[in-house]
Image (cartoon, rainbow, N blue to C red; front, side):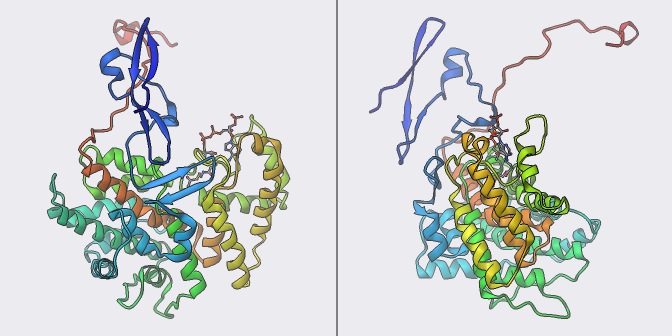
Length: 432
Ligand code: ACO
């Protein structure tokens, strides 16, 4: 039993329980603080706030550790597949042969969307960002499965909903792309695995069947594994927050897609490439951009650098860097953008500004370069992130609804606005 933390408030000593996690992370439980003392904790951006207890993912930002359900990320990338990792995250344990084959069959079985939904895609302008289409389509899926929207579905129904969503989101993502390039939609093929099917739906045209190159297939599988979960990040917390009101799974995931879109989160992979392209157009002078990033009067940030949690290195970026070199080499791609990326990285890693602030390349720094090498257009990068993150979002939603301690998410605030004042009629008001 650990001694409680003590705080002194209005001359009174208050004991707060100390919580210790599996890996010895320590927290102070303030659940009863407001109710018993009237004080609340203020923590903009929730950097010091644990919103739940979770058994899904462990991160040690100082040591650069990332584990899903106790398994190290590097080992999973080497030995597992995205489908198996999805099962692991959602169900909590690696599947037996039989469980896995049932899971894969169910994912394949649910890979069609209602034909009516195809007309929705046609209502978007051709230049619509695929993240906008994806979030709306995920929410729209709910109208076709009203039987799954009961406030208290049983575990079998929940499991069906989850499999449906896992399978259909990649179809929606590929259809969003086809809509943006004005090509016919392509359906899944039963003999293909999850990733090969996605590549087939993306790149097969009436003129040519897309045969997934094994190097590309494996790299995309690894990219999906690396993105599959990252504990209480902005989009996952959004999924949990929306789900805490008992909104259905589709609505909660759709909100997660929107949160991921921002350039400070999943949208950074698109921003990284756009930044590198800007630097290329500007004569490849990346040193100028390092100086801009350090200049506090300049809003420019080095996209793909820095992380709220990782303060030594991002283990996902380390794995992706190796893949980047291998893939570009194997595919014979000579991308000038990679040289700019390497130059930026080299300077940033030795520059005191970045060292002091512990700013290292994050997963988005390399993922964009890889997606580009695979032939994905830039505006699809964040959609690919969403596909990878989907099992993580689902696992957190499931953990949250199954946790008897879940309460509706409802942060507090310190009000700093005007005190009580009298209403004045409009003709008595003067311009400020
Ligand atoms: N370029 C230049 N300076 C930076 C950068 C950057 N990319 N990131 C942080 N800093 C500086 C800040 O200006 C701040 O400096 P100061 O202490 O002198 O004021 C210091 O480093 C700390 O940064 P914060 O913004 O307080 O860090 P926070 O944890 O709030 O933000 C974030 C983390 C959003 C990832 C930030 O580093 C960033 O904007 N990076 C670029 C966008 C990006 O790559 N996002 C993807 C993150 S990974 C993911 O979501 C999958």
